[in-house]
Length: 457
Image (tube, helix red, strand yellow):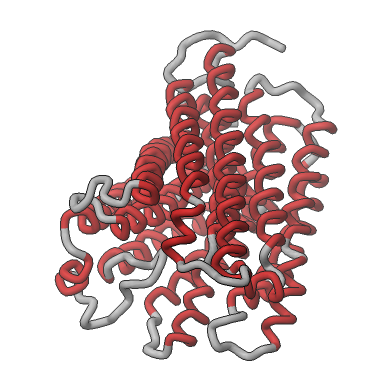
């Protein structure tokens, strides 16, 4: 059954994809600046392009999570959203704050931006991923609190399911851990220690609960598998996620001045982090194999399966490759980190948002699924983006391995910049793969504008 208030998810999904497009464009700008240092300088310096690229990543995924929540919570709770009007107000406030922040990065020198936005009153700026000015951070807190209020009030008046409970647990964790972005101690060790409480406990903790809940919802819809079966899988996966993810935070503490025991604890528990992602992959394929019906939206099913595989490869395998302390000693801060980050974010979070958009947007537009021609284009977009991301990861991995050898292990180590010149060929190939990724994203957007009927399979 469709609920009228689910329509508020639509602007969130549209904004998410538009911001995703912006993120990729700035990623390509950065990629060019790696090999052509003066590209677009001084209009868009590298540090500004990097801030915009990473901040857009976070913001578009948050838009996607919020849209997914507003779509699935009414259906899971079997009741209309508590306040669709509040959801729309929240959307416009968040969009305006995000746009103003990005324009601030692009148009105002960062030091000046800090002075203009009260960073002298409460210093929160200048940290990777958390570069947002103080008013933006406060705005994010207000937006998330109003969003959570709307969602929880909806749940309280309706049915409570494992999916909605896991989703809300993840969203509450997202809100709580973001509060550490306001804590910026002068001691650099303490700063990095608590900085990871936002960054790691988001992407390797509570965001995984959001991922699991959204994926479980879509799989129930496209396969018709019993809810009880899906919920059992979900509980096991989130348990492993929390056990490995929380203590696994320690693999970020190896070299920042924290106690030495984190080398053992961080190594052991972060080495176990691929397990929940492997379980997620098995879960997705198991549900599709046990399906009781052929859903007309085959593209959404493909995205769901791809999410399991790519999150396991990116977050699991590539994370494991350099997470053990004796290995990380040499690889820390190299392009291996970038390789892991790109595939992990794409596989785990970008793909699950694309999955729910692929499933929900046709329904929000009054049809069970996009037409066959549109789905063919969408499946092409899946393969273009996914294969391109695999190659981006492989090129960055090759650059990282060579960088580690030349700069840190060789008998006569090379300087950082000399090493960067030596691996430039991989940066060029990464840029080509990035262009292919952009073509895939454009194909994904285009698929929603292709008319045609869905024929029964």
